[in-house]
Length: 468
Ligand SMILES: Cc1cc2nc3c(=O)[nH]c(=O)nc-3n(C[C@H](O)[C@H](O)[C@H](O)COP(=O)(O)OP(=O)(O)OC[C@H]3O[C@@H](n4cnc5c(N)ncnc54)[C@H](O)[C@@H]3O)c2cc1C
Image 1: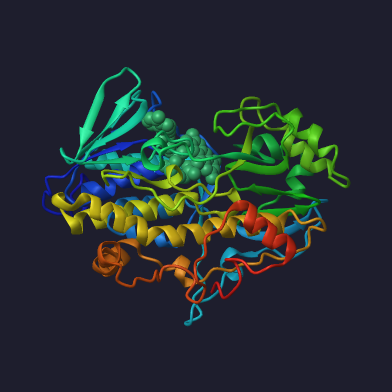
Image 2 (image 1 turned 90 degrees about the horizontal axis):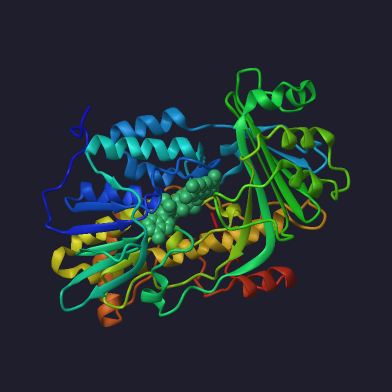
């Protein structure tokens, strides 16, 4: 099909250097290419990292994907649409499985959107396929160790591990959680500390699990082949179990006893997880069977680290912009890391296209203003959901049901509609109000500590109000 199905804007003469070929880096490459920019992508790994288990992709992403018909087709082909079911940590179901959409807030027409559940490896692969269709190459084995900018030269650059440098009109730092751009952006690395918790998480071929008849009976497919995503709520922990016709997927939160790391490559043995579940009263043997059927070298023990929201994602001169996890990390309970990285890409590319080559710093700052409050609300949602899921009795309900401000958002259109107003705010202090967040809740700065304390004490917080 070549690239003919994707409409590309006329050349802008803007060169963009992207560090990191994760979801944020790849979608930035696509969006900047579509906007007529010259794009280069540098990736630390020697080859594409198509590992991982699952993540959620929200419907807002469709606004970007509609510009790439083949990508949209592949997205629909590889997404899963499981039913949702809550259970106790003993495995006893607390409800009949229902479509995910039935637990989201409907819009005024009764339409109930919901996220798509994706295998991360498959999702990553469809982005790589789209890159290939457009002829955008990834330069592997290029580890960025530092970022810099020259305000006079109106250029930014990266320093690679071998000491060489690469420059462009705009540098996008999409190098993930422990990205190297914080020293330039904030003057120091973003403070990070352990939450005290970690998550075991794994995905493996389902045949290995269901060869045990007890597992096959407890984790069946529905008669029509639909799979069921189960959320198990237990004392101070939660777990997920989910199978489809290809994979068995599971995750369990647990206190971090020093076995975990914040790394997608940090593997532990299944026995480590069973040692933990042995301490959970009422934990069923069938769940241990699922854990022990996990092949060696698959189970990740992910350390949950806390980073407070950071309002500035742009270097002082405006030529380096952090994007995705490099700008804002999410707790897994937010279900928004990948979606917000993709929204960032569409927003930043739209801002740069509007501002043009002479005004890249304006574009970067407008993008930051347009995105920060929205992202910060969703980060807070992750904190609240974590608290609800790990409550002592395991019975609290999900507190927040975001509505169309989340599901229906079109980041490119939002940037186009709000660019001038946001710029006037930045330059002259003209009033500007974000409208891509819960409509009637004023944003107020928060930290993980202040929010957790407010939740604990039942005090007012950013979470109070109408999220629909
Ligand atoms: C291998 C892997 C597996 C994952 N599995 C899951 C999962 O199962 N479930 C889930 O919810 N999330 C997973 N994630 C995280 C998820 O993809 C992100 O939270 C989300 O998609 C936001 O994407 P991002 O592009 O901002 O960050 P990431 O997806 O983390 O991408 C960052 C990219 O930058 C590269 N990079 C890092 N440092 C440098 C450097 N110094 N120089 C150049 N390149 C660099 C990394 O190799 C990576 O390709 C995984 C991430 C990775 C990298």
